[in-house]
Amino acid sequence: MRRSTFVFLTMVVLAVPAFGADDKDHVMFRGSDLKWSAGPPSLPPGAQITVLEGNPAEEGIFTMRLKMPAGYRISPHWHPAWEHVTVIEGSFWMGRGEKFNEAALHEIPAGGFATMAPMLRHFAMTKVPTTIQLHGMGPWQLYYVNSSDDPRTKK
Image 1 (spheres, rainbow, N blue to C red):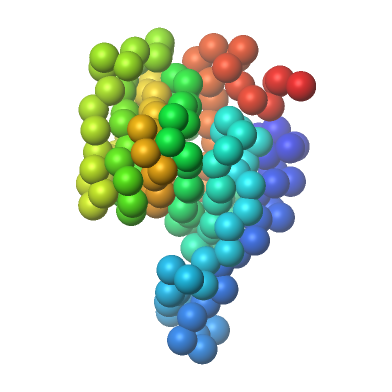
Image 2: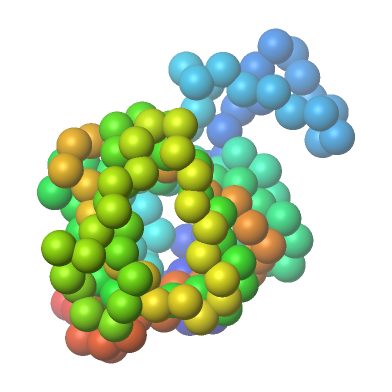
């Protein structure tokens, strides 16, 4: 994992447990208790993130949410581990392949779910402000099919 990603994910502001719960074995949140920060350097600017459980930079289960503005695009990429996505608000458009193809996008509306196998090449975009919940086994990593699409390499 690149150092910038590791540093970001280890510094992510965790959501604050609600209802007076401070037991690591039983954590509950109200939506209003979530603390958002800028998205990870592996994603294009404009996303916000909050981590609900675990640490995406470390081994083990994690759950995080991503807020993306309308028109947000994530170029073709893949992950070395399973990725599970639940759409919380808005709608998330996803497609498979090594080239971004808007005609190949499929809408996942609020309440919808998607899962991607390790190394599956996929891409995504939003048309309206959208919040997704992403969970899986860490460390979470994202590799762009075309390295020139990687925001970490842009100045």
